Structure formats: structure tokens, C-alpha cells
Length: 352
Picture 1 (spheres, rainbow, N blue to C red):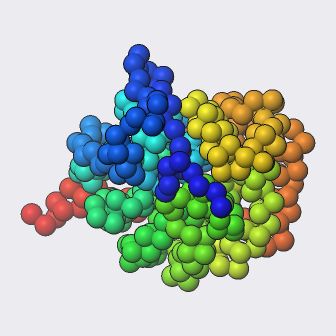
Picture 2: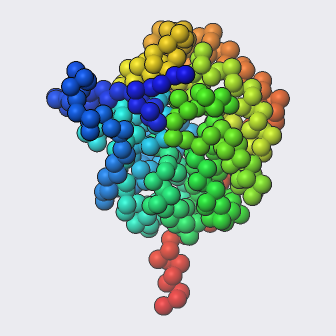
């Protein structure tokens, strides 16, 4: 049985923040007080942000705008590309990312204000461009639900990607959006191996729950797909056919994938996790990742960074294409309706 140092967490270390000159480390653990060895608790930091919606300039991420009500993510996926952004908040990309969550409590007000700008031309906004908008704190804060309600009121398209079954709580709002062709929901399913999920994505919904989410959304008329991402060569690439088959049977209409890339602090975080969680396979997996990125585990080149290169990456690409065709995925393309957008102030003028 594998036991990680930090139970219930993905990252097992807190690497130094590249922007800070000083760092705090624990050494000589035998003399650390008992209270310092207690399980790490999640801390929520509430803030009033100045902005919410961000224009996405990267040409290969498939979204134009993103809005993230939370920074950091308690789900704790060890490979998460968003970890590096936590350094901009003065935190570590490691354990801090999943245990220090910044909550944008004024996000609904910011979105309303944004939609009222005369310069805004309606376009899809992704609510999970960085971190999961349905992570555990959402159950209490309900910020994501409010953002969806505002999108419905203004008739602005919105997309979601999540690993949390909490999305079903907002089925009523999602159905309202779907009736107007204003929404698409993707569920991230990286494998069907539950033991692997517990190690790699410790605080997410089980894979069985995620497939039930896909089925429930699909049955409710919500345009639904899955992201089989990231593919980690030598670890979960073999699971792709099963994931795509199960997703199709659950009612998914679309699927996508990316190959993992370990930029910045994510490299040492993931490597440390590999050595703890899968010591006998660690070197093989690390080398397979490198093989997909020209001998490196990090890659920032547009067009290559998501899909990789080389024989291994090409094999994964062909496998994905083959099984999507076999299971009837990606046969159509969703078109959002942007013609219904309305500014609420203008809409309310006739009332006075």
C-alpha cells in the first residue's frame, strides 16, 4: 500500500516561489513540534478583486475569455498547469496551491459590471480556464451558480470544465442556458483506475461519479463532452480507449485530450510525487513525458505544447482519433447563440 507524506494532497512539497528572495523550509523533522506535523488544513482567503474576465491570447487553448471565481484549487491534481499561477499571489505552486484558496467574493458584481460595458461583444466565457469553478468551497459560497445566473440573465454564452459532481446542483440554470444554446459542459476524466485517481487527483469526484455527471447532463439536454486530459505517457495513456467508450455510452458528444507538460515548478512537484507514488515506474514515466516534448518535460511552444511531438505523441494522437470515430465522438460542432445578448439596464428602461 502506497502512503504519501501528505495524505489527501496531490503535491507533497512546497517548492520555493521564483518571485520571492526568501523561503521557509522544514528540516530535521524529528525535532518539529507535534502541531507542525498535524494534517494540513485548507485556508480560504477572501478578497475583493478588481477584475474577473480575462481575454485569452494563447491561440491553442480553445477559449476566448475566462473567468475564475477561485484561485488555487483544493482538488489537488498533482499535474495541474495552473499551479504556477499561485506564485503570482506570493504562494508556492505546491501544497500552497491546494491549501490556500483565494475566493473572489465580489465576482458576481464584477461580471454584471463587465457585461454592462458598451464595448463588450457577446462571446463564450469559460468559468474554469484556470482552476475548477466547482471545487469544494463552491458548495458554501455559490459564486459559480451566481455567475451562471448572470450569464442567463444577460444571455451570454458560457462554458464549464469540472471534475466535481457539484455541477449537477445547478442543473436548472444549465437547462435554461441550454434552451437558448448558451452553454457547454465538459467533465475531465483522466482514467478509469480509481486507485490512480486517489493518488493523482485526491479531492476530486470518483471516475464513476464523473460518468454519472456526463449521463445526467446529457439526459437533461445539456451539451456535454469530456476531456481525457492530461494524458501522461506511460501512466494513463493506455486508459484512453476505455475512457472514450465509457464517455460515449454516458452520452458525451465531444472529447478532447492534451499531453501533460510540466512547466515551471510543476516539474519538481510531479517528479517528487512520482518517486513517492510510483517509485518502480517513475523513471520510465518521466522519460516517456520527455519523449513527447523533444527531450524536455516542459514545453511552451504554441501548437506543440498541448499535443506533443515524436513517435509516442503521434501514437496517442492516432489512438484518440481512431476511438473517437469508433464511439461517435466529435461528429458535430457546437455553435453558441450570441444574438440574444442584452444589457440589463437597457432591458429595464421600458419599465420606467
